[in-house]
Length: 401
Length: 147
Image (cartoon, rainbow over all chains, first blue to last red; front, side):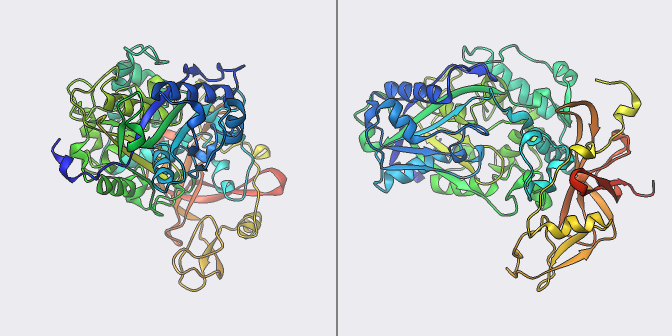
């Protein structure tokens, strides 16, 4: 990495991360989402060496929702944990697309002087509603009436339509999606925290049940419960804390109208249709960071569905548009021997799905040098939010100071 | 998984379980389908087509709309083959995204019905058909052109 001289001087850093156990869908009950959230917050505070009463800000994404139908509430957390006062509490709009960008929201609060110690959080429980079937159960509205009757009953069903177009336009093969699933499972195989640890083969992949052709079961992320909290503060304040601070090099969220509501709309021009929708955000992110994709040492790419990992590799410039299939099939994303290790934590396909937060947690651990599958000498980590209805987002963290 | 060939032939969701709702912007679309017509909103000022119907033209911001009846011909831009739906484990659906040749860049998300999923391809020519759904509404779906 030679780009350090062109990087902007970081103003905020991640100083604490806390996670609950990860549970299979619904199995965290009878614990409540508030209990899970508070456990993660307390663990993040302990990790940072901060008293929970020092928290004065909350920066959420996904409308502060824990999946569909559940919500995270700042006042409830204050009441439960005894946090005396907040001076900032806000969320990015839409869903998991904003995961990585929520650290940028925390940064905005800190740089503006609105708050000093800001929590970003996701607490997810799927006991009552199941994300994989969500569009079969939500009531119709005037806009989803143009989508829902088609029977595309979950997010993966919707993204299978983008995937087929990518295969058509660029000759992308299912072998590439298999490689993403296989390599992530391999990364999960030595992790205590991973829900799925048994290695899978190409035969397993091609034998897996088709759900929404061309997507099979092993292209779909897990449906899990759990909570993760991350604490961001100023680089100045971070100096006194327990952990070596992990600097935020850049964060960006937003996106282009040509992507817009994405697979809620399906009106994207051909180029954007077979994409992850991240192209514009990637450009802003790299410009703000003063680095390029060649400088990134480990990529934690939001993997709700394996083909969208491939499309993010293209949109972030790790390979050319349309060449994601060959790039992945060459072994480029492997932890061992790959040129850009992807989802060294096993991702949402194999470790757990906490709507993007495991990617931020892994990015922090990689930059602290404490990751289970540590990338030797890693100095820059990329984490992304989910390809979805805008905003989408990205985050670049630097080696711990 | 069913091995009955009939179950592998794609259908639409059973109409009695399909509900739509409308807004003042979208109501005309669903009134037209009840009459067996496929109509798409076009900006009265600049001619831009858009779907779903929205209150302003995204190109010129006009709020004036002309509803244009379509021929019913369309082209498959992409599709999925969905096996099972909550409560309907044996159903096969071919959800499609179609280009409307007379209203580009507007697209519809619909279903291709009465087709073997293995025969479906991007670029396939399809033709609108009308599928009764709940509350007296009618859903536009598509069949293979010439079939």
